Amino acid sequence: MVYSSDYSSEEEEDVEEENESVWNPSELLEELNQTTEEKRKKELQIQLFTLFLNQQRPILSSKMKDFLLEEGIPQILISFLIQLDEKSPSIPKVDSQAMKQRRKEGSDDEERVIRSYRLMELFHNPMVDLVEILQPNLQIVLSEMFKIVEENSRGNFYHFHKILMRFLSRCPEKTTYFLLSSGLIWKLFDEIHEPAVADSLLGFFCISFPKHNDTLSFYKIVVEHRIHERIGNLIYGVGNTSKAIYASDFFVRLLEKLSSQELAANLFLSICRTSDFLDGLFNAIVIEDGTFSESQKLGCANVLKELLLKSGEKALVQHAFARPIPNMLAAIHGRLHELASKRVETISEVLVRRNNDNWKQKSLKLSSFEVKRPIGSYLFTLLEILGNLVSVNPSRISQISTGAWKVLSNWFIEHTYNNLYHSLFVKIFRTLMLSTCEEEQRQLLQKQKFLSRLLDNFKKPDIGNKGFIIIITNIIRLMSDSLSPHTLLHQFFNSHDGWKSFIPLLKELTLAQIMPYQDLEDEEQDFSLELGSTYAKSIGITLQPFTPSGEIVKKKKKKKKKSKSHALLVADAHSDQTSKEDKTAENWWKELTATLESNAPQKQEDPTSDWWQDLKEELNQLTPNSETVKE
Image: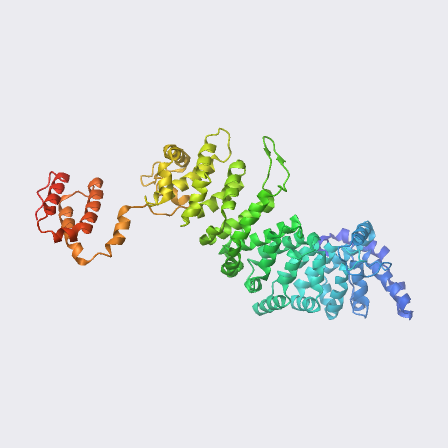
């Protein structure tokens, strides 16, 4: 935009000369004052504003300011923005092809567009506050502006957006209250497919007020007008296919904007007050009878994903050197997952159904290979939702069906170059391995032979998921170290010859991966690959290794005091005679202590038993350089 301050003195004189040649309203004003016929009077007023906006740089004089306050004049001024076609009926638009054609034809009228642009420029001129001048007629002006959504309007939505933002910045309280109370703001949702209209709605709902009380009042009124229900009907409503994708994009942008805006949590709390909003999203995702188009399903999945992921962030960082900002969506995180986590089984069923049905994605040819059944953005979004739900709610991992695990594991092998999917699968798989769902673990690793398939796939020369196979097998290796030897899964690992022979190679490859990133001069550097090591924690494994003494300690609490006496005697003898560095003796001592604790009552009942003498002999054999253990 160009304002008076942007011109040099010579350029300003040239502009004034040009304006004088175009703008000479004396005769029109004189005729206007003398005319009493309303029709002729309106024609002269339109002609006057036409000449005014034909100037290269319209300037409001004191006479023009007074003229704008006269009755009916604000409507005529705004008519150059909305550009109603009087030959066409004024009907609210319902995605009409005729409306689109008229706008296309009207866009070619250069003079109309230029006048609309100069009107927008006049509103943003810092030398003259046109909003302040029109404030007595604020409601009339806004009502006229919103006629741009009518069927017979050829107005420019971008110019409308800029002028509306000017009203919101200059008098936010009055503008927002009137647009909400009159319901005009909701008319814009019919044109949400227009980028400028979406920007206008975003600017309206993300408005900032100078006082906190005004902000709270605004959010309260917006919630009372059921904003989430209105937007939800556009996103997942039946028959809203053409607008659903635009409405979902707008809602995602709204979440992004308001998540960092102070007090906006009051606006989001109503989403989780009931499950209606989430139920509408899930229904559109689950129903496969053709009621919802693929684009509408994708829009619903995107909204759900952004709600889950965005609400999990405690703080937001706008740019690299900014101080973190509290996340307003964090207030609904718990309730949101409480409602959504119940649908884990539903989402897994969708994956199975999509895999069994005719694959809706066409094959994808890339430079060096062809993907016969690409996953696509919709299924990938569902996988992101599933991964987030089970990682935040690990107990829900058991709700993923056996069929869904088969689909997920097959996709991991089949889509060998899809690293985005591989990272998601690792996230879901790790949650299963860290859980206590041994039956589900056996179903996947043993009965569905996923472990054997991983090892077979690893031997292939040209695969793109070899690095992820290393991560997954390390997760399996570390998880097996935490299992009791009595578990069926541990016995399966011990009986799997291919797995046992693969472990040394796995450790060698893992060390080769992490060594370049280690500080070799650091003596305290952790190069271990076992449970509790830095590497185990880096891949998300926080399990503890299984030790037989762990189980024995638990049984120890059930023994009576009488059974502890011999154990204490042996412990004193062992502490005096054995070396702490000798790990073999230490392990032997733990087993011996446990044996004494379990057998001591029986030995005491037999006074002729020589168990104590046997114990002394064993101790002397273990520590031959020490003195004989005294009784």
